[in-house]
Length: 465
Image (cartoon, rainbow, N blue to C red):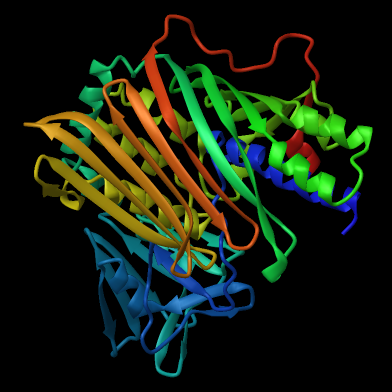
């Protein structure tokens, strides 16, 4: 490997640091795993089929009638004398016949509707179009093409199950209000990081250390955020490694000097679903280092089944007095377009239910786990209490590839101070540790959510399209 290739490799790794920092501040998108078989998901859980599987007929997804309606907690029946198939749930009766295009839905007032995909019988099992099956009982239904999954949401059932189940989190909201953290909040943090980057590969690889500090500052609220990150790196060991591999040109040295201090600014407008990022790291990648790069979070999340504005406004709409009200708003924000998003969102909401917590001493602990493209993601929260009052909390996230942790992150807040510890281990490529403290205080001023007038704005979402 020549000097220029070596330099480019290291610059790429260093750029990853800044990318990771962006990902820590900008909400990420859930990625759906590919699947060759048709799956059915109801309220974030996979519907199991024991003796008959969903099929695709003429562009329509059909599901075994009995299995799906019973999963929906409906009573099903077949009347042999006239061939009628019936399902009943919560006073709504659905009546139809095989190979007929009319369906009667009776919830006190009988209504006959016409469908363009009639039910049929195969191998002794009755199949019905899944969209008809869900919508006749008042569910929202969608198709996740990336994972070949029918996604169904019974929001009425989800909301009913949420009632009275978030009293512990209501106590957390009281804690947040006591710390004056429910309005605009000023954040100041000092973090340290240590990295080791692989020079070479295999048994000849040498891990070159890079370390430095990060200073975080800014103001955020439920609707907007104005944050700035300053990164200072110690690249002496990296520079020495490059020197050993060949002559360092003046151009190389100039870039190395620029990498020693990197700044990043980010603006968020949750009401509009937009984010703006400005950083000199973009100039090192041949982009405009002074421009603001715009991301339309609503557009980016449209395919993931999440209404960004509704989700981000949930706490504000709830008045920060009831966590249950926030949960109801979050349920409303879901759309049945992405199976993984629905699974993660609903499992996360379940993690904060009272019955998900276990009392250990004076603490309450809850956790959840899900799979993401072959990786296992585990999340946990611990509420520290004194009597019924919450005095602080811990949150932990770990991502595993097999049995080895790929990334871990832990935050611990007591009062208005929070500590953060993060580790990352990409086998054979790099390791990283980040730790430090962030202090929060009530802010009198409101955060800016858009670049100043006259600034150059480049829309990354449009470019990606």
